Image (cartoon, rainbow, N blue to C red; front, side, top):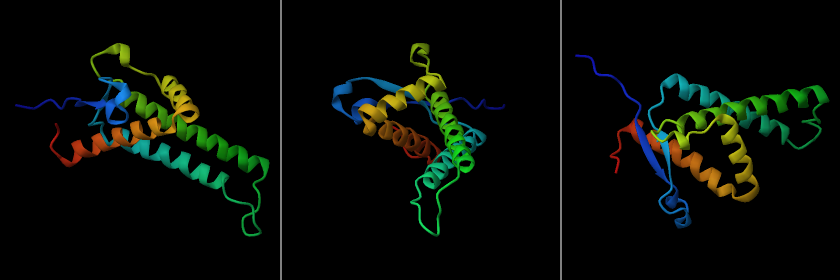
Length: 143
């Protein structure tokens, strides 16, 4: 008898970040397939490596980028960021309550708001989401 592999959803309690969020939760899909995780890894790499290159100080050994090279890196970062936002939109939109589902554009808008208002919130959500996935993958006991 084959066993159907189901999506496993776990709550991420925002009160773990700050008690002011009360009982608010985000439903996180903690067992995305390997291919989906690999897409995220590539997107995150594109984003991070592009940003790192754009932030390299200008020196004799590392001259300033020409316009074309800079434009390519900016496009690379945008492509990576879009992949990251799509990944988290997918992870955070698998719960039963469809009113809590998010599209990639909504996640991007939220991330931008967080960067302006509370960077720690975005960092917490990303790190805690990835930790929930790792806890599931490693078989750690869940609540």
